[in-house]
Image (tube, rainbow, N blue to C red; front, side, top):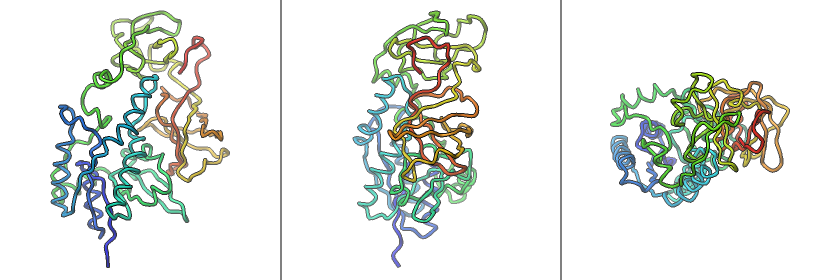
Length: 371
């Protein structure tokens, strides 16, 4: 009997390595595929060379073939250019969502099919459930590692050909398995942050691609208290790196970025993380995508995440035919950030989501400012 071939995206990390081992144990013909998505190998912050070495070492131990494929051209065009455009408009994008949509579950999937695979697999922490002819994307069993938020753009065609071997396993168990079978990367540190930036300072990286455009930093009463280097270099809710450490105004509370006036090139800041300007009870999102293929019914009560690792927030949902939707939260949400993803859930089922475009603004917000 011919074994079913599955191509596993192997990053050199422990998660994808254990995923490959598990599939081999389950009787699949496993082929590892290492994706090279960034060409900046000369940077001291780029780890792709070591990651490739680690992936090959794991493939040797697990006894599977492994190949490398270069998607850097597609990544730049589909992910990185969008990343720069969003920052240049004052928004804060999440490139991991777009990378999953355009690279890992599109370019990678197409390449895997060319290699004769019937399915692909990744080390993401998420689960799949088939209901009739439809597939549902579910949260992972480990709530601390669930990555369904980053996968909410996937469609039925993509999910039908995907496996998530780690969805029903806790991270601590993954580490234990890696150590038990002797994987060389069993204790390798998990990658964090944006893949193409690595460990380098974010502002330093962004300044290589976007020009600084200094402007005033103001308080809600329009008092100028400093100068920013460019709205692209700040995000809502940001506390560190604003440059106002010695300015106390009416209290000793720390400063937080609260609003951006794009047309006026003004950065608004407030003191204290409970300031009203930091909270939004309504979120509008655009470019929505729904895992089932259609938007959910408005009459139901849902939960949503407006950032990764956020507790689910109860909300109601209103959909527009132009792929926009609005979420109304039972409790105001802190530092809702345009450019990030608003992801809708029904219990453990991830329904889909869209990109945050705007939020409800305080009535005292100066005329002409935007969120």
